[in-house]
Image (cartoon, rainbow, N blue to C red):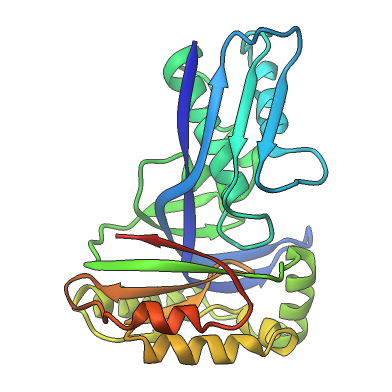
Length: 283
């Protein structure tokens, strides 16, 4: 059997840190938006060989790929030991804050649920990665809190199209958190304050109002390292975007446009964006 899968991606339309836990992890409060990804995966089951084989195209990935982590957890729960052959076609590099690896994991978990081993896997998603539980759910929007384990569906319809810009640099999550701690120094917003902010952003975008730069606690520290973001956000404003911001802890930025009033000059502005390696569009 050969199956062709599409991997989802996510944007953090808002991202606030609401505290630091005793175990050293941070609690986030973020509005997640899921959109159709630009990465695909071909799974052959059973594989012609005797062991699992993963081939990754377009980007070289270092360390153990998240796909093998998924396979380990699946087999811990009784998934057949029959080997798989997987071709993974990447269009998003790691370190961009778009959850591309988590999307790959979610696609493989969804395939296992539907075609091979239904009735398992509940609760395993959080063991794979913080973004995986959200990306495994059929949700467009959700307010995600804690360490990614508290997922509250959000009923929203935003009449927008968008684009994601991937710069030439990458962001280390651990370094981003160090910069964030130095910047905020424990001055966290409360969940109640974040809820008010999130509702304001959603209602404004739903009404087609310009919001501008979206809140992300990682952004101030990242701008200190890459001042190019200031120029980039200025270009997005000139391009007619309703809102723009940083996804996750970086490095990718995104812009949202009114579907019916998209400025025809947007492409010109985006082509002039400094240090951009790749642009992804969706409608």
